[in-house]
Length: 166
Ligand code: HEC
Image 1 (cartoon, rainbow, N blue to C red):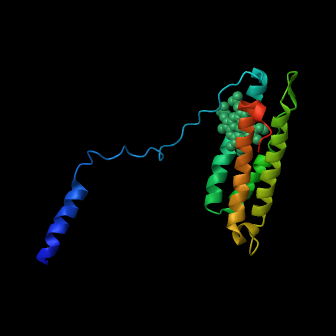
Image 2 (tube, rainbow, N blue to C red):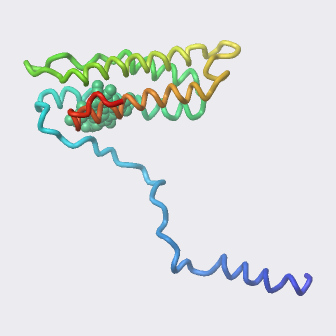
Image 3 (cartoon, rainbow, N blue to C red):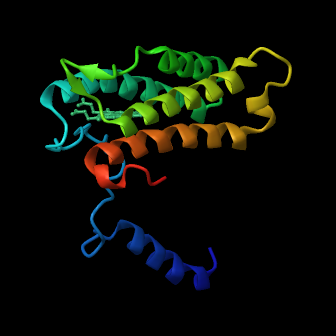
C-alpha cells in the first residue's frame, strides 16, 4: 500500500474503534412506546370514561395493524382494518344516565367517516390500478386525516374548552 495512505487509514481505524466516551446517549426512539393511555380529567364521569376506554383499546389495536399495512401499501389489509374500525359499535350518547359530551360524539362520527374513506380507497385492491397505488400520497394523507381525528378527540377530552379547534 502507498505510504501516504497509511496515516489517514490508521487514524480512521483509531476513530472507529475508540470507545465513544463523549458521545451523546444512544437514541431511545427505537424502544417500543408504552401505551400509557390518557390522564383522567374531572369533567367526565367514571362510567363514561370506562365505556370509552374499552372502545379505545379496540381502536388502538386496529390502528397498530392499520399503520403497518399502510406503510407497506397492503391494500387488502388496510381495507379490512379500516372497515373493521368503521364498523365498531359506537360510544352511546348516554352511559348510565350520564351524557357523553357532544364534541366527542361528533368526532366519533368523523372518525367513522374517515375510516370509510380509507376503506373505499383500499377497496379497489385487486383491481388493475387501485386508487391507493395510483396515488400513494393520497392514501397516506387519508391515514393522516384519520389520525388527526384520534388526536382531536383526545384533545377534546382533555381540554374541553378547546374542543372545537381543528
Ligand atoms: C370520539 C373521541 C375519540 C376518538 C375519535 C378517538 N379516541 Fe381514543 N380515547 C378517547 C378517550 C375519551 C379516551 C380516554 C378514555 C379513558 O379514560 O381511558 C381515549 C383513550 C384511548 C386509548 C387508551 C385506552 C386505554 O387503554 O385506556 C387508546 C389506545 C386510544 N384512545 C386510541 C385511539 C386511536 C388509535 C384513535 C383513532 C383511530 C382514537 N383513540 C380515537 C376518545 C377518542
